[in-house]
Amino acid sequence: QVQLVESGGGLVQPGGSRRRSCAASGIIVSIYAMGWHRQAPGKQRELVATITRGGTTNYADSVKGRFTISRDNAKNMVYLQMNSLKPEDTAVYYCNADRYDSNYRLIRYWGQGTQVTVSS
Image (cartoon, rainbow, N blue to C red; front, side, top):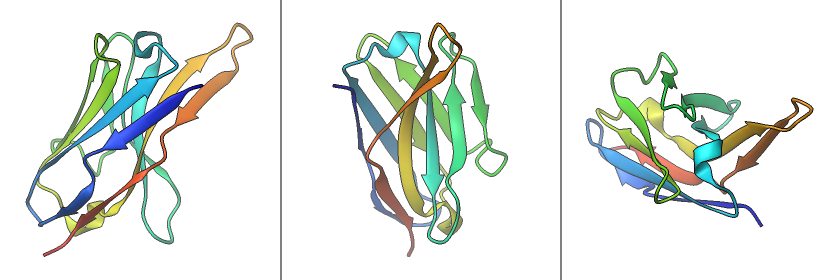
């Protein structure tokens, strides 16, 4: 059974930092592209950051220069370091793991999502 378990959510003051962790079980993270999405109230889920198997990263314009995604294949973990947090970063954050099967169909697993609230 595949599980992606996130941690590191909670309440943060504007300008603060928070490190999100995603622990994977039932899959080998090294063969997956990993990412983080978020969903704010009343909005669609949006991509925040991705990291390929080779370590290439990509970020949404809204978080570039503030967020950093990384992976530790030995620990089967993915991280999202969030700095200079803004109230508009408030959302439920989801970890995801992607790969393509032999028929080039996307297989995606999601974490359960955890809330990050940026407020004073």
